[in-house]
Image (tube, rainbow, N blue to C red; front, side, top):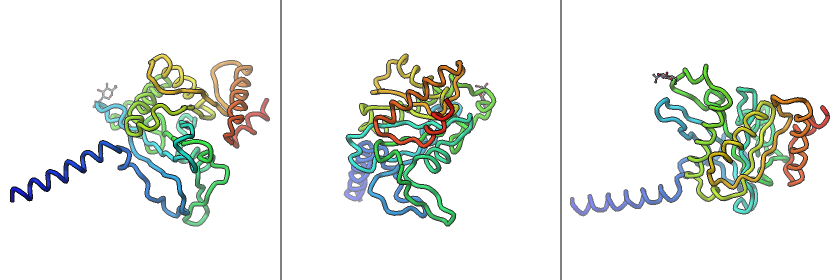
Amino acid sequence: MQRFIRAVMAISLIFLCSRIDSLHEADRIIRLPGQPPVSFQQFSGYITVDEKHRRSLFYYFVEAETSPASKPLVLWLNGGPGCSSVGAGAFVEHGPFRPTTGNSLVRNEYSWNKEANMLYLESPAGVGFSYSVNQTFYSSVNDAMTARDNLVFLRRWFVKFPQYKQRDFFIAGESYAGHYVPQLARLIIRSKVNFNLKGIAIGNPLLEFQHRLERTGSLLLVAWINIRLYLPTSYISLQQF
Ligand SMILES: *[C@@H]1O[C@H](CO)[C@@H](O)[C@H](O)[C@H]1NC(C)=O
C-alpha cells in the first residue's frame, strides 16, 4: 500500500512539473470543428484579469505557419466598441481559417500567421467570450480600464507563454482600436514592463483627434505593410484619404 502511495505521489509530481514547464498545454486546440489539417499550433482560453470581480479575457492564439520561433508576436484588437476579435479579426479578416456555408473551415490564403504569431484578444470584458461576473463593470468600462485589463492580460499571458516574452512585439487593430492600440502601447511604456514592444499599427482608425492625424494612422499602416503583413482593411482606409 505504501509503495502504491509513493508511486502515485511520484507520478503526481512528474505531472505537476510538466504542467509548470508548459502552462499553455492546457489551452492547446487539437483541432477546430471542420478544420483542414495544418502544421501550425493553435491555443485558446481564458486569462483572469481581476480575481475579486471575476473578470476574464478570452484569447485565440495562432502560431506562425513556418518558423514560429523567429517570427514576431502580434496582438490584434478589433474595435467597436464591442466587436469580437475572434469573430471578426480571426475568422473574417486575417486568421488562418474562414467558415464556409457548410459546416467546415477553409484556409485563408492571406492569413497573417504566414508572417507572425497572431494573438487575438476579446476586449474589454463583455465582448465576445470575455466576461465579468460582476456586471457593474459593463456599465462603467472605459478606454483606461480596457488598457489596464489588457496590460494585466499580457503580463499573465506571457507567464503562460514565456517563450514569447522577449519576442518582437507589435500591437495592431482597426476602427475603435484606434483608441485601444495606442493607449495600451502608452500604458506598456509608462508601466516599464519589459515587453519587447516594437511598434503599433492601426487600420481605418477612429481617433479623437483631427482628420489630419487619422491620416498619420494610415501611414503607420503602410509602414507596417512594408514588413510584409497583409491587411485587407488598409485599402479601405487608404482610399478614404
Ligand atoms: C461590483 O463592482 C462594483 C464597482 O467596482 C462594486 O461597487 C460592487 O461592490 C461590486 N459588486 C460585488 C458583488 O462585488
